[in-house]
Image 1: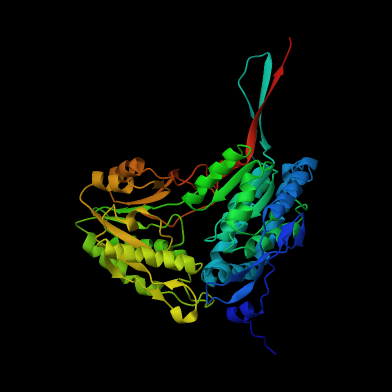
Image 2: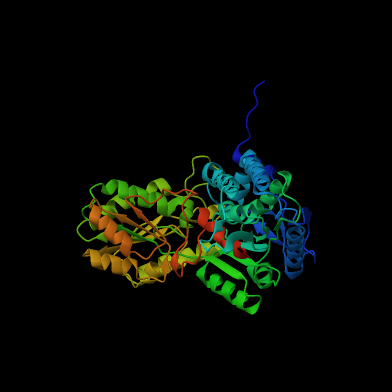
Length: 498
């Protein structure tokens, strides 16, 4: 008799997530027994109780990580041996694809199809890539005179504190874990209290794959408690943080107040999407913009939320962009065909609606969207929203919204477009659309952004660095450059006598 695969909704109803900490290879409650209730943004259903980690739990996790580092159970393994374990970890992630995707969707509201086909494979690919890279990264010998041998070697830092956000919980964790673990560090991960479940499950899978206890610990909790305790801890050697620019400033303060630990911040963005009149395929540009902007409900630090369009083609472009909105209407994230899900919680819903109100109040014209959706479900949904007639000084053009809201700003010439594009505190990504080779290169060079796309936006790979200029952060995630964040350079100078 044929069996029927349960629907995602049926699987969700049967799922019982484990919200306890994972410290020294073991699940455990918070030291004081405190928990917080975790609800799903899909419909506000209760998912369960999550350990409310605080300073005592961070102390325990850091002590476990420090002991693991000092006794060398991971750090002193040969790179090829670490590679083998991390490859097995990546395989475990892929084998648990459905479970991890379901946890991600229930936790933060993204469509199940994207959690399953994009987020889980991307996390596994990241771990696998750094596993493959670590035994192919060579040290150096300096060009000294004949009486010296100067060796330049990379060494693991020690204990790395990773604090990651709720918009891409698995991927952001993997971006830190891959290079940090591959180079031999121990890790204490503090996931967002809004999306803790996949981080906890990843740690279990890593241990199943052979990672020694203590090397990868997870303490869920709130930023002002667990996050602050981790960033202030004197036995943490570096912090890898992804989140808001506001909190990134605190990370630097915490480092100054403690042991001057290294801090690597990947922060906010207000990415500009520049469309010049010489670009002929406007439908492709508009479609790419809609796909990039409304993907993940607009909850992406690199979302192209400022659309700079030459005044001669602006009316046509706005019409094309608005025509894509119906395809991105919010729907049930557990339905396989859904492309836009729920915002992460009510606070984020109110924040996004507040920005929409500010856009209207300051004189921008809402072309499409602009309202809450699916309120009857109890979940947190907002329509894909496009504003036209936006002045660069408006609030919606200067501040990161983190929702499906984009602003069209019209420009007269190239110089004005560049000035507007560079006219925010951020510098994460940008995009230039032009069929003129000289203009494409000229404008790309002029833009102050960590990544500049030309005639595309959504292409990406683990092999390229990710990070920004200005208040979008420092250091780079992804690529071989990420190894710089989690290693120290040591020079060993040897005298050679004749």
